[in-house]
Length: 333
Image 1: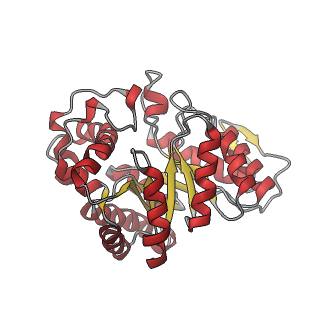
Image 2 (image 1 turned 45 degrees about the horizontal axis):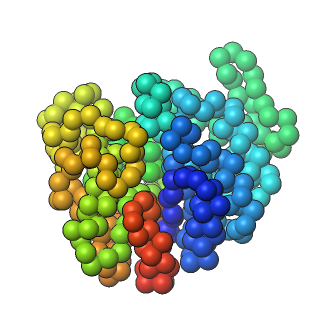
């Protein structure tokens, strides 16, 4: 199992870059950021600085979407970075949450998401693609170039099936072992049905980690994550209903007390619109506790097929947690 670091691109950008450089020194494999251009600074500009100051860290958005980003622009961004620094980018992508909702727009459709993946992958490989009847090719990308890996984020059955059909990787934004097992099995089954090798898909679980003995404080600092996940869960409940065999109750049951969501505090501790999230859900979705507890949960996730755990470092002691992972967790993986 590898470990990645996920940051928000809060100013100053130099702090984000410095943390990513430190993460590489400690043994982290990936440097991810949110991609929500209204709430935070533009990540692709910052990726260039991170890649310039590191030698092996792979960077990318967790996650971008095909609604706010033109597909050809995304392909050119990834191809440019890979041309400058070698193949060290990854395209995490989903239907969209804060990036579109803060503009009053809904997430895109899964059909549009799947089409965008084909275009992004094709253009970054130097191939020609069809865009509504127009053939497009990036002339400075050599045919046969390595396509940017595309990792799809999702929760519902249709999104998981899409990941199995066409994704290079799958991102589940929570670390509940039961739900990790359910989603990975669903993605792998879809891959086998599509004639793909299920083991060729990289499985990534992403969630907050807080290394501490004070569980009560850690829960309060990471409760925001259950609220963020709840945005997607609410969409699933709208589609499938509160009690559906298609989606486990372990994912949907906790949002009954949800009453809207304040995106001005998105992804931040103290977001009062996430108070409905119970301690039990925070414990299941996140990794909280001393380094030994972190190692035990990671071992369990690895046994279920997780290839990478990506830390959401958004709480009041994130630098210490990053350092603790470097000294007391990563050496044991």
